[in-house]
Amino acid sequence: MNQDTPNILLVNPWICDFAAYDVWAKPIGLLALASILRYHGYNVAYIDCLDRFHQKAVKTDLHARYGRGPYLKTRIPRPNGLEDVSRNYSRYGIREEWFRDDLLSIPKPDLVLVTSLMTYWHQGVRHAIDIIKEIYPNALVVLGGIYATLCRDHADVHSGADRVITGPTAQHILKLAEEFTGFAVSPKYNPDNPDTYPYPAFDLQRKISYIPVLTSTGCPFSCAYCASHFLNPKRALRSPESVVEEICYWHEKYDVIDFVFYDDALLVDAEKHAVPILEKIIQAGMNLRFHTPNAVHIQCISDQTADLMYKAGFKTLRLGLETAAFEKRKDFDKKVTEDEFMRAVACLKNAGFNKDQVGAYLLAGLPGQTISSIEDSIKTVKQNNITPVIAYYSPIPHTAMWGKALASSRYNLEADPVFTNNSILPCQQEPFSWEMISYLKSLAASNPAD
Image 1 (cartoon, helix red, strand yellow):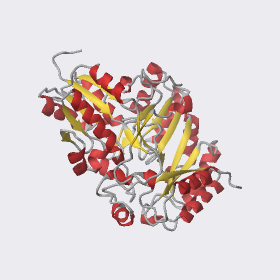
Image 2 (cartoon, rainbow, N blue to C red):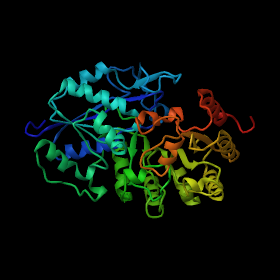
Image 3 (cartoon, rainbow, N blue to C red):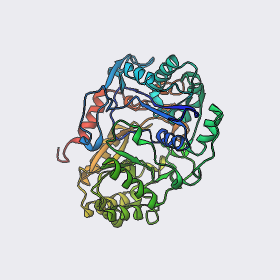
Image 4 (tube, rainbow, N blue to C red):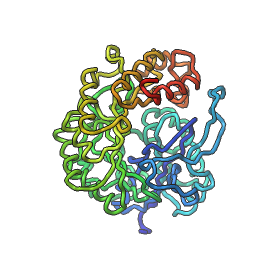
């Protein structure tokens, strides 16, 4: 360790929610910052409050469920305003005392970078920052990430951070580090060229059960319910060679077999981007498994892309359908028509995919949406012999649908992001109940003939 450079600690905080599960969730942005800082000589430490493989946790199979798995959880009181929700509320992740021990085991940090994900998880952010400040009261704590960007004013007041930063940070992290620590370095990468970035520092994890891969940022679509444009205004692509080299690196050095594409628009302009990536993966001859939890655009699925994804080893393929009420979808996106959906499904089936591998996301709880419309969408997906996957709507600031969400919600969404929790369907028009959610889950899971 270089004693002449500052010590920077990066922290992935807890989740506080009614339910949480590691469905390939890693803070790729935070670990990208860690790799850049380390690459430029900073002393870097990383603590993941969501670490399922903590040394004090019960040992679990690294490759079970394609690398996914349950978090440890600690029951805590429900947030103010949600006391009437008849479901347990928990802090998901490592025990609080383990976090304290981990903090005490590292060199005293000069700067602490904390990330944030879902806006309604901000309680976990605040709890982590409070403990950091208790143990290292003189360390500067800087908060970034999705919650910090979407709810800047709330984060300024309630997060406990000394400074809140918004938007993508990798391009100017060295300038920020110099501002916060006084330590200046010359960049050894081109901030405008993603191919020159070091790989995110996934090796800082205790175990690597899967690797997220980001081949592009931004999205050319502007869906009313999505904040992708606000979070990543610029579209940027890595070269196919760079992407495949990274996949080979993690597979060959760390024996990783599960890779998860984090792109918002993986198949867009496929001929120039996804197709050469997939061809090179196939040519490399590695026996890997690929997953797309962020969904792929249905319009971009062709016989060629379907065949290449199947041959490359895609095991979990999610389609961004959102609703099968095609005549009404112009109100929130223009991504797909009924004919395009039917054609895409046919391409995937012809390539060899089965219904257990292909799922179509269906949004539930949209402003003005009825239960019957969700039922109809589930039936339509099942009639095409693929799997409906219910995705519960969370109102997001800075999206086109935010105004409708404010008007339709039974909560004051602007008062606290905790009320945007998708688990409680905050904009559901019909009387809310956990039984209704259970009913939708069972309907999605049942056989078409049921």
